Image (cartoon, rainbow, N blue to C red; front, side):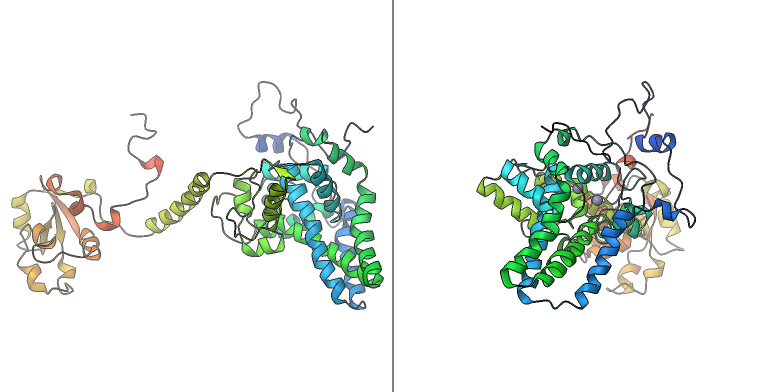
Length: 455
Ligand SMILES: [Zn+2]
Ligand SMILES: [Zn+2]
């Protein structure tokens, strides 16, 4: 009986890779520095650096299929079957290869595991063992040279280039011990080639042939064209879903959320979310987010085929969203002009204020001295109201005595500050001292007084 998985492309986590006592500050930079890379692909060596078998499967075959499709009529039954079959086999990859075996997002009964392993083979993207191993490295080393499909090397590289060209480096280490002892993964790895042929070619063709006599259409449309579309839709997870869309949870790395990505990849397009919460069985966490894989797994749970569906709490998800919302608001806040800080303003005595007000249009409100000379003619209530308060304390008049000014007026007034009245501000209520635009402010943790300062 087969008891050990032998996958040439699997590189195990080597505990001796980093010498004892030499704990690196950053594992990726340490590994990149000490591990040899293959020379770059150039015009003189590209021929030797191409994986020709992958080049044939992912590039030549789709081209030949397109040519064949031009001379093969598409019957309605074949078209419907092709759409159904592309989704059914894609579920093998999204629910099986990705969420079950790469991320352990739930537990599946043996019946479901075998079903997903068989369906996944129909997309011809390698065995579960190879796929999950490279995907774990992708998550662990995203956007670095240890990420096998690093999108920073370009859209084409992340989409298909990383498969066509021999990798310049081994993917970063990732623990696959659970996969190496999984009997379904071992079984699929052993029989992968016949399984792939049966699921990708034989079954879709036979259904059309025996079903409605369309053998040629079944082979060209349901088998070959469906295969190419299915493969490139999955490849979009590595390219499009790291390229186009929003970053609602973390903008330090490339993964993005987009409805287009979700539509193309059977629900994997909420990729910014996925990279934040990779063990969540959901791609889009709200029930109505387009994610057929999530709906499929939810149904499997109700039918008893899947258990222990993992998901992150709404509290942590909303915390992630809030972090990015605050970051965006902070950028907006930083782009605006704000009143001078108290510490930057000169402290002026009452006598000094009155003396200076004889030659300047100064008004004292809530302990601050304001120079309103450039606003004199723009005051909606008329300049005479300003004129009669020059050199006086107009706090009460401003806050309702004469007129209860708007937020905008208070914000604008604060921009006119030129000094602080000695002993004036401490007696003003916060409501009057702080303009409305500054009642809530976003402050970096490191900017808070005393944080991190050794005194
Ligand atoms: Zn990704
Ligand atoms: Zn993933």
